[in-house]
Length: 287
Length: 313
Ligand SMILES: Cc1ncc(C[n+]2csc(CCOP(=O)(O)OP(=O)(O)O)c2C)c(N)n1
Ligand SMILES: [Mg+2]
Image (cartoon, rainbow over all chains, first blue to last red; front, top):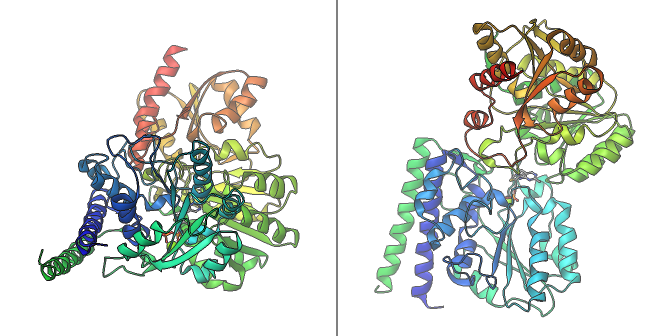
């Protein structure tokens, strides 16, 4: 990929992280860890991969994005706002009575939201139905799903995984955000589904494991889907929970963050540092 | 101390530890949910009696059943909708139909997961679990009765569902208050109208009753902490003696406390009733106290509803 394009996407990812902070500033707290670990995945989708039209969010031929781990909604709101689905001022209503952006997404409140998730383990089945429906319509559209690694313990996911393979849904692409943490601790200690790749493969899927913060790799990997004709694809994205916040990265206690002013200041400082690095990179490219 | 604010999940967890010190059969099951249920200290204190399963509420309900068949007393606490609605059939067949001694606790119930929206609100749990024969449903309204309810629930043999909220709640009772499963508590006698409250909004009903007294209305105030089995005698005498009943619950008016009271009164002593709760729609999202206001569950709004109800009769 053109390095300029990638740099642009890295800037977008930074803006999405800034939007997430803006949401937390408004709501004073939120599920920040799993939102920040998915920023690159969601950025690649909304700013490169998804065939969507913010001006026509219900366009029947659009690609679908199903946020199965609904508690990651901060990253979805941040990306939809950045992509122009609604005015960024909506982000400032996070936490307010009757806000259009609740703590889990509601498709009836906000354009661009495809599903009402929040209870874990629903997204993959819904996405499977979408994939069958689109195929019936001979649509080229794809269905993308974002799941948490802790979420995989819900048995419903494995029903859906079997169904997707049985029905040869090669228009279905799943991301597992493998940040290796859930609420009570590391997934390896709470309820391990490792080795993840072998599990998915044994369910009839084709699997890739990638660095989930590498925008170029995310895009090139998705562009290779379906990894095999007639098989659903899963991308296991190795990530760092709370990525971008120095004090919170990889820490289980930031699954849900009640931001105190000191931490908020540090968070802004951390994002400013990322911006500095990006600027230096731009200069190196002579941009 | 009366009116002191206490954390319901902390009180719940401490009571489970207290009961477990003398009862070795108690085991705690977690679906990535213990820490948020006030049971983090239980895990530290009794690591061999705490079992973590990750996010699989349906599976854990079955595991609880199996453990109970071996004489254990499983306590399974998690976010309320995920241990009632999600696993409903496991609850009905494995705990209800098999009549197993399992204690399911839904926390952050009602609207207390305020801004997290409808997937996390639990305003149908009483309605659905009430349809399962033999399940005791406990909805205590203050820290003192939460603690007593835990002990009563453990002592009772049979499947139980208990619900608690999450914001700190005021102490309404003295430590000595008599708490018996299936028996309501008459907080205050009166003759113009009966106000029945339950759970997280009991304190709102208590405050509303005071406001009504200030207006010269004599209110009989009842705490129904056990919604099933319901205290039939207490409700029928209130119906007979006050002629009007208003129920107050942080739940759909479909199928909850109000419905349970109406099922008895309509057949045995028909009276005028008013049910305050959430109507046939998905509740909105926002700060907890504001949401309660939106659905008429703040004391001044309860007062107005009661006054209008009495005048219209
Ligand atoms: C059915 C259900 N059970 C429990 C929860 C509560 N819950 C919200 S997030 C979460 C942990 C999710 O962990 P993971 O899937 O790894 O997400 P991430 O690490 O990306 O935040 C839990 C248990 C829920 N939302 N839905
Ligand atoms: Mg995780």
